[in-house]
Length: 499
Ligand SMILES: Cc1cc2nc3c(=O)[nH]c(=O)nc-3n(C[C@H](O)[C@H](O)[C@H](O)COP(=O)(O)OP(=O)(O)OC[C@H]3O[C@@H](n4cnc5c(N)ncnc54)[C@H](O)[C@@H]3O)c2cc1C
Image (tube, rainbow, N blue to C red; front, side, top):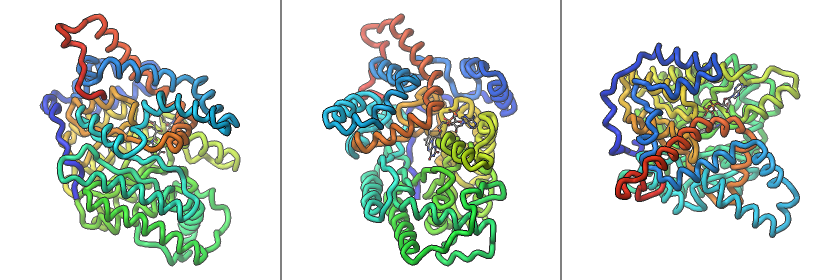
């Protein structure tokens, strides 16, 4: 099983560039952490470990001015708190029950935020966007925008959508699709995920609890994991609940078999801690069944660095996977449910599972990345990592560490990923330096994707404010292009396909 054998043509030039020691990069990061304004200074300073964010001409060479201007406007609007608040209010208001208003709101959203952050209504438009990414040296993680399912019928329908996406990538030639994205919440009813998570948590407290339905998996909870969601001993699964769980695993297994057939690894999204143990359970059980004895993992499960138990759980899973000879893939994110997690913990009067401050989250994320990079450097069968982040410092630090450890920049074991329409400077900088870079590409009908956009807007105010560095680079590049007009129509880069 291999991922897309992607070799961007633009890449090789910086392969022999001078290196900076990881210590130096660590100090840069510490400086950025300690002094709020130092981050900008660090990122704009020339660096010598291969990732260049200073030369905007090179960075955005494949982006047309029109596209860059549109992105700049959209990012400015999306990061404005009043715009987000009004948008969220309108979408949730009774106005949406009036057909004319609904049509108008969807129309405006489609032409603005949807176009910036989503790849289109269907597979054909998502594939076209993936091809555009490919033309600029990046690949796509295809994510059919599905929300949580509450019954088996919706889960079956959702599974068919995942299968359609996966089968569409089966081409036999180099593919612009690097991963398929699967949401367990779309193929297993959420009430079952809650019940299973409760039982897994209780079993962690009371090892004598027998769970007859439990498949061979990897460790799910650590001693540092929060157990407060399950205050009392949960009842055993009923026969009907067990059937629902079996059906969910059967869906997962079918997705895995199709992914193997299409040579397409899959990413499993992480959600909130109330249901995450069940998500990890299904993901790792499938990894044990489908990645045993495999060098390259089929399944990449997500670890959220904002959780206090993130590193413990990741290290335990990795150790067990090594002992069982299971190829383990990890997608590392910081985490998108901070507000709701904090609110719930506060309402229950318990300690939040989220790190006490952002510096601890940064530290945890970077330590997890560091751990996995060391594993990758050990060589064959040692795991794979998708570093999903918009954080410049984490991106630069991981890139420098990979170089220090002698990991091939084009290794299939290390991918960087950003959401489509965001963090273009980081994506282009890493790509130009020779690393594999993918964009996470949500697609689907506008009315179906709107909940996705809403969730992003509600949960991730910070996420969009982090686009300020990107925006300032785009602004600089646009000004540069205006000041240095094209020589006989050449300098103003207009690629054949818009990025
Ligand atoms: C390709 C891709 C896939 C993703 N998949 C998932 C997924 O499956 N599940 C998921 O949950 N998220 C997912 N995300 C979103 C991700 O978790 C982050 O919300 C987002 O990327 C912002 O984090 P950052 O690494 O870019 O860093 P930054 O923008 O530097 O950091 C912001 C993050 O830091 C954390 N943070 C902020 N303030 C505090 C504080 N006071 N205390 C502690 N921590 C704080 C939060 O996690 C916040 O999102 C994904 C992101 C990408 C790019």
